[in-house]
Length: 177
Image (cartoon, rainbow, N blue to C red):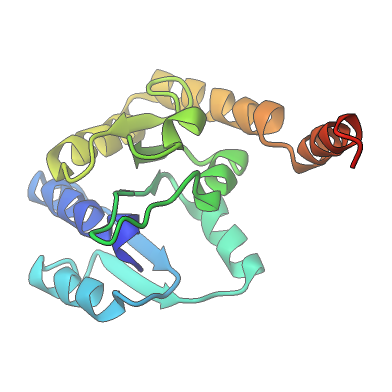
């Protein structure tokens, strides 16, 4: 719950979906410096019955929430102090668990999330576009199936820690270290 996560955009997108008559539930796991601001925004947007905050949870609980999720959404942006995510682990985890993702085009996220192939990308600070992307992944079955499959394959092929460790070790050997 920090500025770089873009949670206000996510919650404003949820408000758009609710205004369209969709029945949705959003779960936020974690904590951070902007907790009070985010919880106040949830109230301000009248999302109390839609959004729930669980705070920090053990990994087994987080995994269970991934298993139950229909969609993962992250509105990353560059914070006013310049802080930003590279490739957030939560996107990798979601994709590996078979949960389709909607994210923003910021930092290195497009290296992982390829628009309409391994997820959907939207501009930062654009809740309308985010809501549209969320709705697409929730309702367009063919897109959803393709994204889930391609996203899992991307994580396996490009972000496998065991393979990356071997590649790193080879670079060190080549450099004589």
